[in-house]
Image (cartoon, rainbow, N blue to C red; front, side):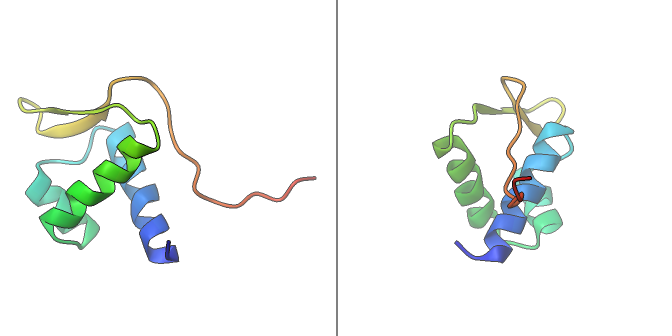
Length: 77
């Protein structure tokens, strides 16, 4: 997986956690990808165990359970 893809997943995680994704169309614009790619990134997060739902009233994706991802390498002390 490329660094760009990991950055996109990290950004998507941040938007979902803050319930700031907007509609799939708006999310595609925020992420600078096509709508199809948005669904692919959502599928990746789901495959990694995230339970993601969409609130049609608020027009945002959200995690059904509290949690997050950490896609960055961290050195051990």
